[in-house]
Image 1 (cartoon, rainbow, N blue to C red):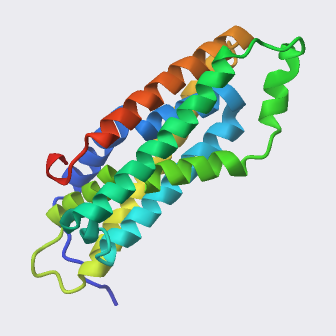
Image 2 (image 1 turned 90 degrees about the horizontal axis):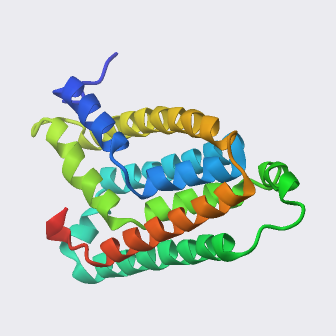
Image 3 (image 1 turned 60 degrees about the vertical axis):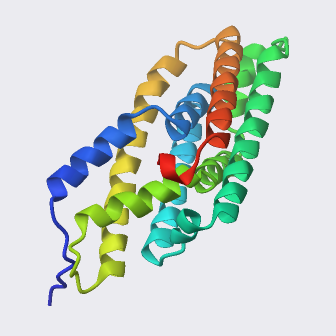
Length: 218
C-alpha cells in the first residue's frame, strides 16, 4: 500500500536544496572551521549537529510550530537575539584562541584536538542551527511550495521533504568535510590561529546580520 503525499517538482526541489547547501552561511563556516581545527572527526560531528538542527526545524514546520515565528514578533525576536548572542559567544572564543600565543607543544596540539570529546562540537552545530530563525522560516516558506494544496497528508509531506532536505544536506556537508580535511593536513599552529581569527570574525558578522533580520526579509 502506497501513500500519496501530493508532492510535485521534486527535481527542482533537489536542485534548489543543492544551491542552498552551497551558499556560504553559518552552517558551512562552522563545519569548515571545525574540520580545519579538529580534523575529520570534528568536522563530521559539526555536520551531524547541523543536520540534527535541520531535523528539529523539519518537525517544527511539519507540526506548525514554526508558524509562530512568522506571526509573533516577540517569539521571532527572542529566537533571533538568542541565536545572535550564541554566535557572538562562539566568535569571542575563537578570537581569543587566535590571539593567544601558540604553546611550546604546538606540534602535538592537532592530535590532542582530534582526540578531544566530540559532543561539544555536535552540540554547537545543533544550537547554532536551531537558534537561527531564518532557517525556521525558510523551512516554513520553502517546503509548502512543493506540496499540492489538496494533499491528503500534509504533515507526512512536510516530513518527507524535510527528511530529503536533511539527507541531501548531510551528504553535502560530509563532502565538504572531506575537502576541508585535505587543507587541514597542510595546517600549522600559525594557520590554526589565523583560521580561528577568520572564523571568529565571520561569526561576529553573521551575528550582526542576524540581529537585523526581520520576518518579512526572509
